Image 1 (cartoon, rainbow, N blue to C red):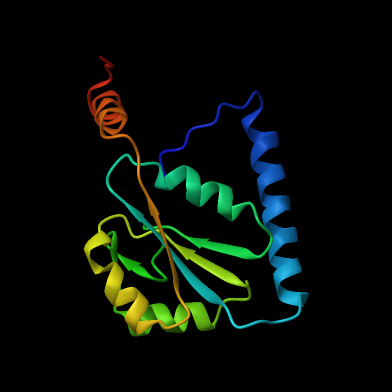
Image 2 (image 1 turned 30 degrees about the horizontal axis):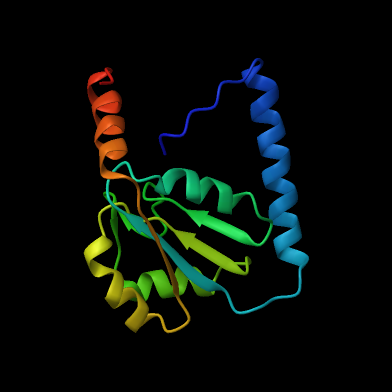
Length: 142
């Protein structure tokens, strides 16, 4: 994830994050169990999928599984959909948000294989996406 937020005291921030994460997991464990719904966030590079995933992950009912999580991803690629189905079924959250960075072309198979799944396609002005990519990879804008 490339979302960077500056903090004054990084150790205090990390402690607060761990406490928040622990409370969220505790809430999910003892909350009334519903069938988890897989939600896929897809889009082109530099389209804003990170910020959408981050905002959704702030919900107590959401478990975020990013492309660097080995539960559902292998080398940034989504594992077989049967593995994803098992990961979703074993989740304690109501929604399992997966952000496969290079799997946009498989979106239809996600919806067909996982019947209860939802899809969020993030689109951004192409000029802004190109400017963001130049700034991200080469450190310059314009």
